[in-house]
Amino acid sequence: MYLIDGHNLLRSVHKLDEELWDLTDVRLCELLDRYLSRCGEQGRIIFDGVGPPDKRVFDGMRHLEVFFSGRGVETDAVIEDRLETDPAPSKLIVVSNDRRLRRAAQSARASVARCEAFWDHIERQLSRKGPPKEPTAKRQGLSEGETEQWLDIFDLDV
Image (tube, rainbow, N blue to C red):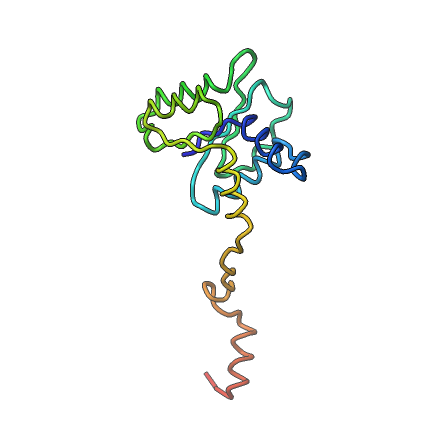
C-alpha cells in the first residue's frame, strides 16, 4: 500500500518537467490510479486542506483513495497517524521528500520512496505497452453466425 504526500509529489513533478507544469491534482490521481492498476497495487494519496467542493472527480479511482487532510491539519500528521496505527507498517511505502515523514516511515519500518524516483518509475511503467487484449471469442466462443461461416468454409455438416 502506497501512502503518498500529494502536494509534495505534485510540486516535485512540476519541478522535474516544464511540460508538466499544468498537471493538476486530478490528472495526477488519474495517472497514479492507472499505474497502481497496472502493477496490481493499492494506494492512498493525501493532499493538504479540504480540497475542491465537488470531490466526485475522484470517485472513479479503483486503486487509489484520495483524501484531504482537512482544515488546519497537515498531510504529514495524517500519514504519521497511519504509520502509527497500521497493523503492518512494514508493508507501507511512503512517497514523500519531506524529512519528517521519511524519518517517521523509517521508524515504523515502512519503505520510503523519494518523489522524483517514484515519478520516474511511474513514467517508465506507463510508457510501456501492456499485453495485447485477448479476443473476446477466445473466452466466450464464436457467435452462431461465425460458427456457420467456418462450417461452410470447411464444407462440414454438423
